[in-house]
Every structure is written in structure tokens, then in C-alpha cells.
Length: 261
Image (cartoon, rainbow, N blue to C red; front, top):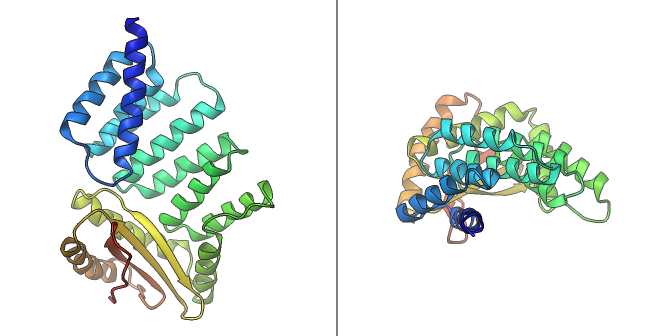
């Protein structure tokens, strides 16, 4: 009875924190403490969920070393490919939360390879890879998606294909877009702002890719971040050209509005 109760606590904690993290806001202190207690109480009987909970909470606390430690412990446990894929997906979510987007992308690709028949996992890999700035890699994943499911279209296919067309037209590769995106993620890490959602609008007629990162902040703070980001981009990326690749912030809880750099 004690074991069943502890297991239930671990499951409940995992479900709760995943739901709360989806909103992009910090976990309440009470929730973090409760989740840690539930995980520690479940380490012997449900180590997979326990380590996953601890890894996700570590992301909320900006503790990169603890994220890796807990998820490596979870990955080392004997499990089916399906279960292991979910661990890698949660690992990706933890890394994404603190702006380690390239690492998050790698974890989603691992998850997709472990469960090649689960298209939602591949779609996640496509989205996270594009978010990291790896548009050509995302295009390759879309081709894999099309092979696995010829009758179902990838949700972000057209935007990513258009983005690749624009980059190719200007002789730009993933190194350029990755550098731009890494500047943005570094700013978020410095300000301890959790990694936002991204919306791509690639317009081939105008020849511009717009990447809007939707943050859970008031408009005034979003505009401040915009002002901080622009000079950082010009300093870090010598050939930065917002007329080709626009990257910036918008409020999560409103329809995005494009701001000129």
C-alpha cells in the first residue's frame, strides 16, 4: 500500500509539472518542493518517473548539471524503446526550457529514432530542430516524415521548406541561422527567461523569414528584450540581415505583431 501510494505521487507530480511548464511560467515554489518529495519517495520503486521529475524540476531551477545527471540516470535504466523515447522527449523539454535548443533538438531526434512509427515524436523533432535554426536538418526530417506517412502532411512543412528556399537564394546555411538563434537563447539564459515557443512565417515573395519567439511576459518587457537583442545580433553575426532572417520576441498571450529591427 505504501509503495502504490508513492508510485501514485511520482506519476501525479510528473503530470502536474509537465502541464504547468507548458505555460512558460516558473513552477510555484510549493509545487517544486512537493514534486521533489514525491520523486525522492519513489526512487526505489519508480526510478524512471522519479529521475524524470527531478530532471524537469532542475530545469525550472536553471541547474544544467542536475538536468543531465537525473536524465542520464533515467536513460541508464532498462526499458522498452517506447519508454526510453519518452525519457528523451522529457530530457529535450528540460534542455529547451533553459534555452539549450541544439541539445534539445538532438534529444528529440533520438526519441524519434527509438519510435519510428510514432509520427508525433518525429513532428516534435522537426519543430525543435527548426527552432534551433537547423532548417536544412529540419527539411531532412520532413522528408523522413513523408516517407513514413505519405498520406499525412507534416504540420510545419510549408514554412520550413519556404525558409530553406530563402536561405538557399541568399547562399546562407544553417550555421548562419543557428548563430542568430543562439544569440537569442543566450540572452534568455542570461535573463533567466524560460525558452519560448516559436512561430515561423517564411514569405517567399518578400524573401524574408520571420521567426517570432513567444515569451510569457508583459508587452513592455518584450519590447525591452527586443531592444537588447538587436545590437547583440549585429555584434555576434557579422552578416546578420533582418531583411532576410528576422528574429525577435512577441507576447505569448496575444496575436504576434512584427516589429522592425
